[in-house]
Amino acid sequence: MAERVILGIDPGTNVLGYGVLRVADGRKVEVVAMGVIDLRRCTDVYLKLGRIYERVMGIIDAFLPDELAIEAPFFGKNVQSMLKLGRAQGVTIAAAISRQIPIAEYAPLKVKQAITGNGGASKEQVAEMVKRVLHVNADDVAFFDATDALAVAYCHYLQQTPCGVNLQGKGNSAKSSCNSWAQFAKQNSDRIHR
Image (cartoon, rainbow, N blue to C red; front, side):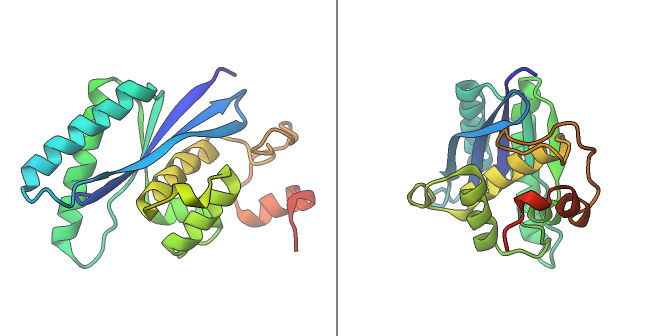
């Protein structure tokens, strides 16, 4: 299988996280880049959206992703926050569309479930699992938005990977795909540490 690059985005209008993963041979995953677009100093909402578009285009042009995975806005009680996140997501999607990059959207619950096995996991728990699974140095992480973006990219990778495949290249790719964590644990008992 050819190498592919996945750009993960955790949208935000104050801090937008991004993470870039390279997948080689369909199973070896490596972090290429991660970071944030910090817009806290910009007070004009439309300028923020313009800067998000420009910076995401710069990331796309720098890393040439084959796919974009983006977290869907969380449907909470604050409608204004949801609308702001939706705008940031829309601008990011527009940037990907302009470069004809396929887009996949994942609910926050789905991302947390894929990374930690718990849809109610905290940002700290997601960050810790991302650091462990992707071998990210703790000193490289200034914002949870960056680890959240890597989590979105990794979730996208996992959605396209049969669960019997060891994600770092030592697994049995002939095993069937899994529909649950219980099935994964049963098929991969050698990988579980108690």
